[in-house]
Image 1 (tube, rainbow, N blue to C red):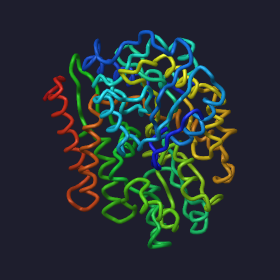
Image 2 (image 1 turned 135 degrees about the vertical axis):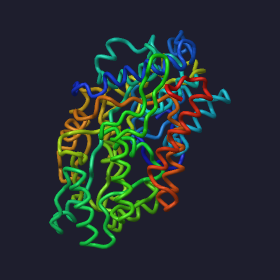
Image 3 (image 1 turned 90 degrees about the horizontal axis):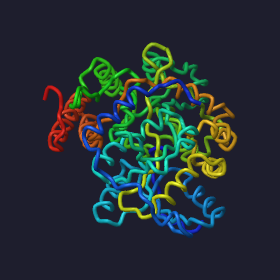
Length: 454
């Protein structure tokens, strides 16, 4: 999944390929990461206790429906027992917790890591090379682009779980009542935002999340930006391209004119605005359908979903989140951990358990499981809309030229800090993007990476 709001920690014991939206960029990301860190980082794949008798593995994650998935696995398997701990979502503290545990030598066997953050964990030597366990048969079951996102330097570092195409969720009853057209372009979105505010001064059809750079990154990805690339043995970093400038200016205009809210993602304030009917639209991803349903269950039948607005009305998108399962470097149970991860990603039982919880709307990387996911997810909240058909079309429209950099934590921390200030009127979004590029380049130099032209 996907990045979602985390609840209290819990311990649970014993319980098509769409068109190639990312092949070139993903291969590029793998090559660049290899330049930075590989041929020696991370643990080897070697044999471990998971290949013997019954074993117990530990797993940290936050994706919705995981508790039910673990329960199902433990109820149907005797050779492996999974102890699960729910941690905060990655950007909300989960990644810091994982990193600290790795440094302290007490990390769990398996962790959830989103695609954008995987290169950094690999570059820091936090993960184990699981190539011996990622078989050709497993790869054939998964979206090729997702496999490439987890293949860095020719090695496999995680088992993909889902893809996360962008989506737009909106209060159909509000739009219908005020005769507001569902936006197909970003120009339409601004028009709809103005119409909603006019109809109800408190109503906003979207929110800018200053604490969540990944949503903004998905927007610039959709527009055709390419922040990271390689040039020989060096990285190229460019956040000043025309696409990024266009997106930045657009969102700055919406903020300046008060046409959207600014709130911390999934915060009590944002949730209250949803419940009060003041927030009547949500720019999210496929996994957001389950999150929204869980936050405002009493609004069942009032919400609908549509493809993300685009600049020219033609299908286009980025990916917002998307989860993998990775084995930490010191795990002595790699075989067992990968067996469990593979089951979570490819078993119909696992997808049924996760989506039947009502909390998850994950869009599986395993193409064969999408009909299972569609059947398992109760779409009555959205008027029985064919959500997974929408997800299919949105996934097919994801842009082909995006690549993640090797210092994503630094990039996003800088964006988060500067976005927060800009949302409060201290600087602009353009200032924030420039500050993030400067921080990224400094961190690359600090790690000994070459940066073209810097």
